[in-house]
Image (tube, rainbow, N blue to C red; front, side, top):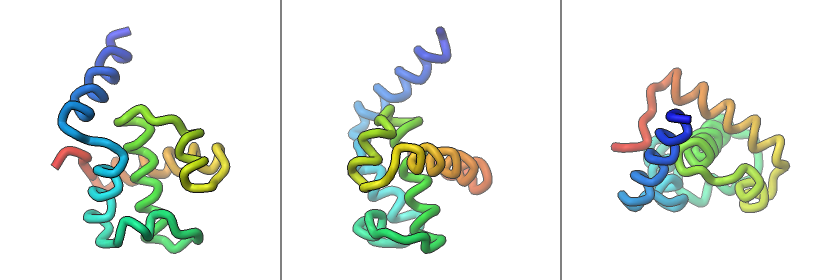
Length: 101
């Protein structure tokens, strides 16, 4: 139960600090040095795919957005979003990326 409370507290704190999906887009675009619009382009170009995975990971795990809402927004399958979230988790661990600057 305390883990759920901690997750909720973290989500609340991020939202209080003004972190929304658009902020996540901007943060990821800065990290990968791409335009925000590139996150929405189709294809599996390595940098773009990694950026999307990081974005999805932070959106789902940090802000608490649903994978279904992301799937609709990016015109992908829900399992594709789940795959990207898991990939994003690996990226965060390998590259030690932090949402809070």
